[in-house]
Each structure stands twice: as structure tokens, then as C-alpha cells.
View 1: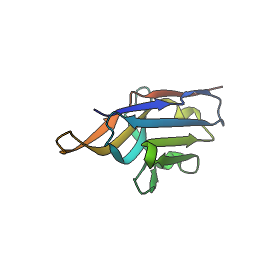
View 2: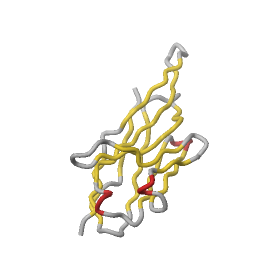
View 3: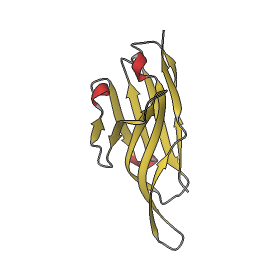
View 4: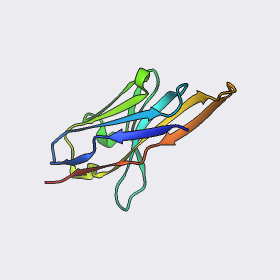
Amino acid sequence: QVQLRESGGGLVQPGGSLKLSCTASGRSTYRANSMGWYRQAVGKERELVADISSGGTPNYTASVKGRFTISRDNAENTVYLHMNSLKPEDTAVYYCTAEGRYYTDEDVPVVLRSWGQGTQVTVSS
């Protein structure tokens, strides 16, 4: 019902930067509440990187504070992750997630959490 489409991953050298983008689409009445990014490295569990409320309040995991910035465009249901000073340990598949609501044709509210398919970020020289 709601799809999240990520873009912006790739290969970057240590100390470099990348910008990830994620847009929710599929229902014209959909509005995202919280949006965020998780990541999963090989052999590790998925972990929260950062999330942001509909009012714009960000939250970061300790290892990325001061290096990553999360932002959003509510009108476009889009969330961004600006990643600076990247380290090899940032290498992972990054997943976009959003918790939001849309209304059915019968005007019934539906609340759901959606996930993107993931985008690979590799930090290596």
C-alpha cells in the first residue's frame, strides 16, 4: 500500500560523504509520522542509525552523532541522511523506514510501518 524508495548508496573512501534519500509513495492520503534509517552490517543485527519526528526532532545513535544529519520534507514524504566523515565501520545496507497513516476509500484510517528494500553503503579505500 505504501512503498519506500531509497537512493544514494554507493562506494566512498574513508572520510568521504554520501547522501541517502527515501520517498514514501502509493497512497495520496498517506502522511508519514516518524521516519528514519536503520543499517545492517554483515554478521550483525539491524540497528537504528537515526530517526526524525514529523515535527523535525532528530535522534541519532551515538556512533554517528556529529557526522550524520537526518532531515525531512513533509510535503514530499521524503527523508534524507547526510553522512560525513564516513568510516569503514559505517559499511552496511541502509534501510529507510516510516510509520504513517493513510485513509481507505471508505475513509478508514490505516496506520502502518513500512520499510524500504535497502541501499548498500561501502566505505573502503
